[in-house]
Length: 109
Length: 176
Image (cartoon, rainbow over the protein chains, first blue to last red):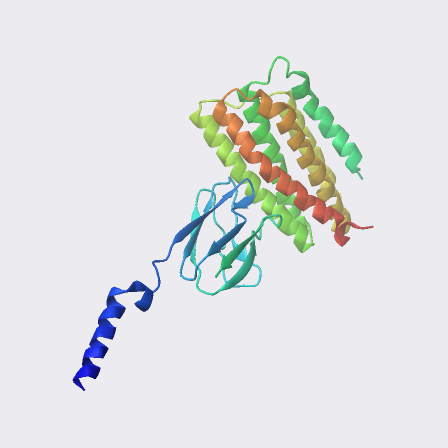
């Protein structure tokens, strides 16, 4: 009984001090620049839990809209930005609904 | 009915004074006026098309033209004010305005599919000519670095609009 209690306590302590055992690494924040009527980079790969900030450096409004659903920024005015935290794994093709020539992909894996 | 060829020819002639005078240089105040007028002309056409067209895609494009060109104009007028440049009327801006008024008058005589076709055909020709003017005259002539940078920043929007208008032009709505 004592041994079992001790082993459990050690297990708990190990979980607390070891991020790899208890929790994942700290989420990152990535930036996609919207400029020249393009998303840059056009393909971005992130981990679940990471955040992505789209910064609109164009003179005109844009949107960041997943074609299959999942995220939609609505209008991002010039010089404004929009943040999204990626939770679900997958490849998400997205567009600017205002400017159909603007396409990009967010990969979450 | 105006044909795209005629529109292109007319717009080309309108822009010739700029090209012709590029040896002496178009000054920044004149460029500012040309930019503001060119945007305003397309805003006016967009407002008409947004209210008159019955096609959802055409209405959406027209509303986009109003939004985007209003945004570009705000940036242009803000920059001109900051640089203390007063847009200076010139033959090109006057011709752009006259052509814009003529286009509006023509569009007002049309409705339905004929209206949509005339509007989109003119948008294709207009955006192509503005891109040509940016490349051949306005950007090379701009003396102020910030004005030149603004013109270069504006260009991709005109290219995207041109591609968008061409898609609409090629779509079924514009057949017949």
